[in-house]
Image 1 (cartoon, rainbow, N blue to C red):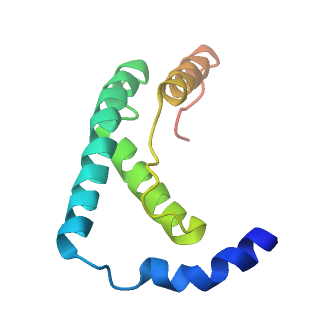
Image 2: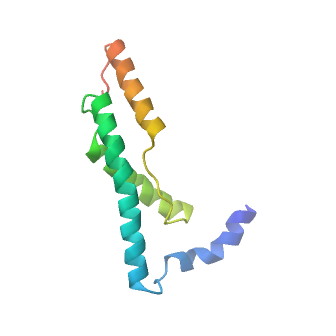
Length: 107
C-alpha cells in the first residue's frame, strides 16, 4: 500500500509528453528488436514441438498484448515481456501429453 501511495503522484508524469522524440523512437526500436529476436527463435522451437499449432504469429501477438497490458497497469513501460525457453519446453510437453491422451490441443 505504501508503494502505491509513493508511486501514484509520479504515474501521470510517466505517461506525459516525452522530453525528446528521438529518445522515444530509439527506445521503441530497441524494445521491438529485443522482443522480436527471442520470439522468433522460440516460436520456431514451439512450431516444431507442437506440429505448427503455435508459431511466430501467436508468440508475437501474445507478447504484444501482455507487454501492453503490463506497461499500462504495472507503470513500467520499458519492461520487456516475452517467451522464454522454459515456456517453450512446457508448451511442447503439454502438446505431447495431448497426443498421448488423444485430446485436442486447442479444443
